[in-house]
Structure formats: C-alpha cells, structure tokens
Image 1 (tube, helix red, strand yellow):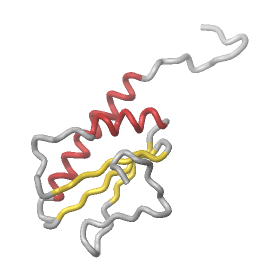
Image 2: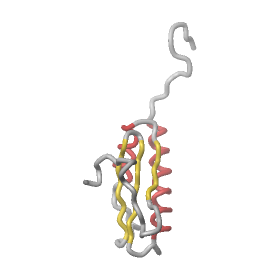
Image 3: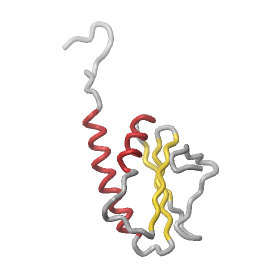
Length: 110
C-alpha cells in the first residue's frame, strides 16, 4: 500500500515498537482540507531525523500519521515538530475558508 492510499481504520494498526501504538489522527472539516494538510505536512522537515519514518494517509476527512523508528529516543522531537507544523497548516486552512454570513436563506438581510 502506498503512503497516499486511504487508511482503513479497522485494519491498519501501527506501532512505534512492539508495545507502543504510534498513530495520530487529526479530523478536518472535509476531505479536501485533510488532503491539503497531508500535502503540506508530507514535506521533508529539515530537522527530520533519518532513523524516523513518517507516513501520512487520508481517510475521508481524517488525516492519519504513523511514525516508525528503530530507536524511540528522537521521537519526541519529531512529534513536537509535527504538531508545530500542523498548527500552522490548520491556521492557514482556516484563514483560506470563504467567509459566509451567519444567516442564509430567504429574507436574510444585512
């Protein structure tokens, strides 16, 4: 399965090592937003440790990220970096959404 194929929550279980579950899932407002986040996050981070592998998948409006590593030592830095970048991506997605009036429909006035 390629790293961009859909995640099947019922069958995909990922582990950092034999004892630790290593999947983080992030819900988005739509499939398009989840794909935008995947494309923005699936870029090589200059602080990336070569012994850590990250895999991004989208299922519906959910972005799933999996880490695998031989040595769990550098994982906290990788996860922290991921969340820092995710914060920026989410903020950019929120700012790019069209702004609609709160009341829509017949008779809705200014």
